[in-house]
Image (tube, rainbow, N blue to C red):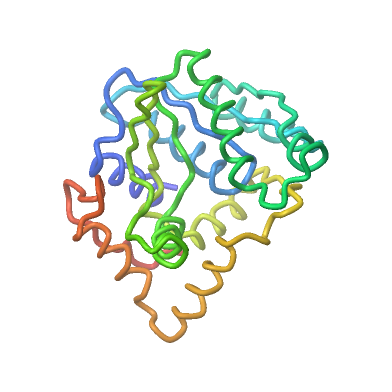
Length: 246
């Protein structure tokens, strides 16, 4: 825990993610990434020299998922949780029968999440994107859009006044997997009909395959994103890959 929270703290400091008095909501989907982020920020809140408030928001897609485990975890962490009930899932899959549902689903979830954040008075949204997500997004942009791009560590949403932050960019996916298992986090099974059948999964498999031949591939891509740098990706402190993440 101490090592992983240290990586989160370093990412937060490198990209100036948290300021005194911030009210931060973690977007909790029920997956391992968002649950791990919630735990790390709750721990960081205890010792961080910059005080901030922390909450959690879950968008219920209307797919019949049980969030009682997340409710229990939030009580243990002393983090207020709001579950926003929606019919996004039935609208997309049953009513509209979308052939390519991911884009519309993301847009609708984002809208519901942003509205809940504004209603509850939060000014920042913490998302559970990690090191591997960044590398895969970069590769996806290159392959499918023909451009060099990625999401930013800190994103200002002009229309809402909300700031998105991604504090886990220095933590590898396998590290999060192992932490979630050791900590027995209440990870939910994704009931989305297209889960594991997306372009992102294709790219994940591609990067995994290439990494067998080029072990430093992900490190080189991540470093290139910071050195180039992509917009908003140059850190205050030069990133070095944390060793022995397991």
